[in-house]
Amino acid sequence: MRSWLDEMQMSTSVDTASVRAAYEDVRSDSTDTQWAVFKFDGARITCVDTGSDFDKFKEHFSENERAFGYMRIQTGDEMSKRQKFIFITWIGPSVNILQRAKMSTDKAVMKNIVSNFAAELQLDQISEIDLKYFIEELNKAGGANYGTGVREN
Image 1 (cartoon, helix red, strand yellow):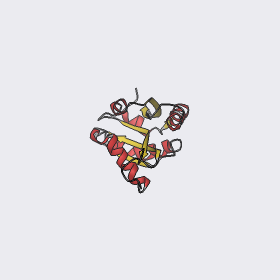
Image 2 (cartoon, rainbow, N blue to C red):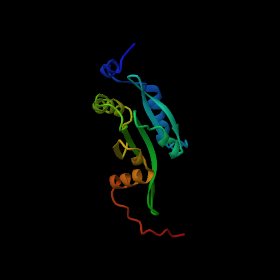
Image 3 (cartoon, helix red, strand yellow):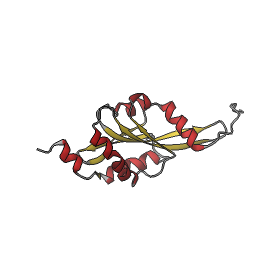
Image 4 (cartoon, one colour):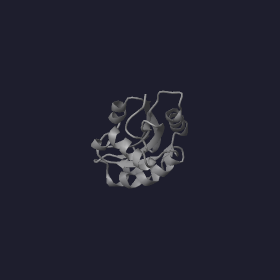
């Protein structure tokens, strides 16, 4: 039986097919998929779910695990709407120090596939998994909004 230390010492791999398919699904304009969640199955990262309901996305992150999220969010003002993407690294507050330390290299492995995003966040509190916060971060990354606040009909 392997211990958690044995698993930590194994190099991380990625289920490339499931991760790439989910990534492309979120990026596609022809599907309703707004997000994907990637988690560890031992030392292998795989896509565990995709969807469009933000509450279901949020349910995937718990205090004692590490995960990644990728999300499509519509931003802009009344003058122009655009799709932006955000990459999330989740390290729950109860994750041990060795697993925390390993996330920087695990994130680099993920970014070989999940490579196109306007903002990147590393979160460690459930309260930070908030759609308004994500939109604010994407707006900061996207520069100025030039709208007047009023849409002409």
